[in-house]
Image 1 (cartoon, rainbow, N blue to C red):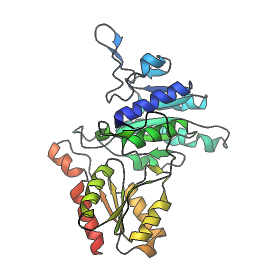
Image 2: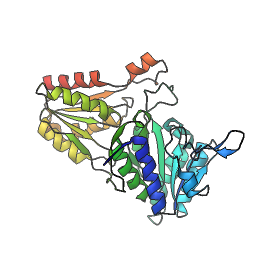
Image 3: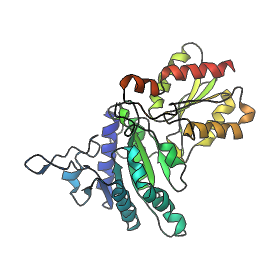
Image 4: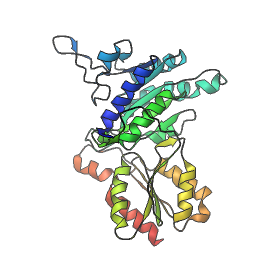
Length: 336
């Protein structure tokens, strides 16, 4: 397998799927580069993160559509296109802007199948760049997958590595329900082994990255990178952990998490979201309700604080959960 960045893996998934299926379109702000310079030629940069680079020359402006700066228009158009038989992949430049289009997502796309008695479908993907650590300020740095995980009718994907990003995006594009696909900005340049061809990763199947006997660690998105470092370091001391990457928060692979906790008796959940009503809180509650008999210590959640994301670099570094907090939580639950 080739070494590819998270960004390139997503780009490759879009190329492969658009070649395979002519009903797939891509739309969003600057997804084809926009009209740049005095020449008026397209820049073909593929948006500010470069994920859609190269799509316009290959598939044309009818399928790679630059939109006005209007998130409600982007998502409204994607929902309507999906009802009309297309498979849109809509990009919101920053996940934080989803609030502008919540009616289209929350009241429309999520409920089309239900409201029409299963007689229609909405095969739309919404790609959302999320996450702190890039010094982009409070309105461009939030991890809000919990917000959309709470909405029935939506599927929510949070990949942590390049291999999963490609397989999960292809699965999302082929899915007949609306999928919210969260991409952490700090992961875009991170490389991993990725096959050249198309493959899919089923939703609702967690990835068991490490196996151990003392603590179950569940980490989401970029937090998997930090958790891996901690789990590997602690293993040298004889503290072994199961490390689980859920991959999708809706559907959530409860079975894998509960089976792990049954073996370890301890749970630490690492989640970049704010603590109240977070995915970490949800997973802790599920384990407390369904796996209480297995617990040897109270579950611990390692999250960002309940504040907006700071702009100052020093404060942002303190805001993002990191290896120090993860290690402390693991040691604490072991003490019981």
